[in-house]
Image (tube, rainbow, N blue to C red):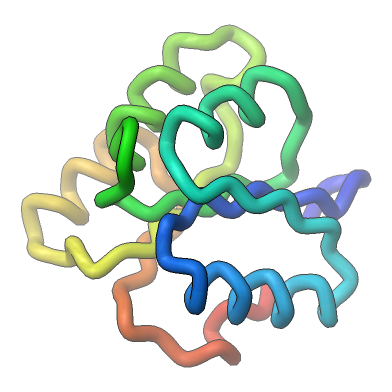
Length: 116
């Protein structure tokens, strides 16, 4: 992880957000949480993150749309991104990796899998 130990989680399911936030905070990371895609994109524009965790299906803007937008930003085009989603069909996974995703984790998942 980078020098900031700062992670952005963009997830519209509150239960999953709380679970991920608890686990990663316990591991020493600073977590910012956004519950929709537009808020997530605003946070990405404003702050530096060592890792961005995106859900795919969210109100306002999907995780794929956020990722596409990020890749056009000079200062964010190489950001480390993990997709955390139930959209885990082969074509979804291929699309994520095609957009430069570092990791693709399907839901449901085990909390232990989130250890960095």
